[in-house]
Image (cartoon, rainbow, N blue to C red):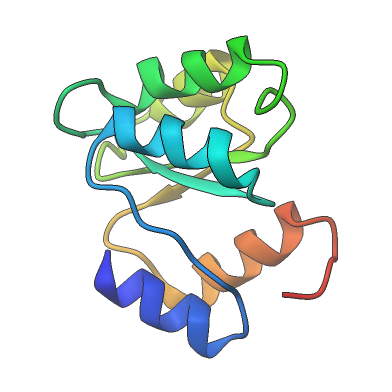
Length: 111
């Protein structure tokens, strides 16, 4: 995640970092970020469960959430979109694709 943070911050975005799904939900509730980049494989609760908690909270329900995962088998993208993710970034991450996807889901807002 350090690479993603460094790249996004170098592009002008401010970042917060969580190491668990529960911590991600808590940080989102506290800071109402413009976007959440959610790893699917997390300690405590996985990214899908964390997404469910974000969507269930009125304060965080509308925050765009992108799935970040190495699960790139056929059908995985559709499964994550069906679960409520707004987009999908697969690992290994193409940095240009990551920055473009973040920009797209931040509704064209400046960093």
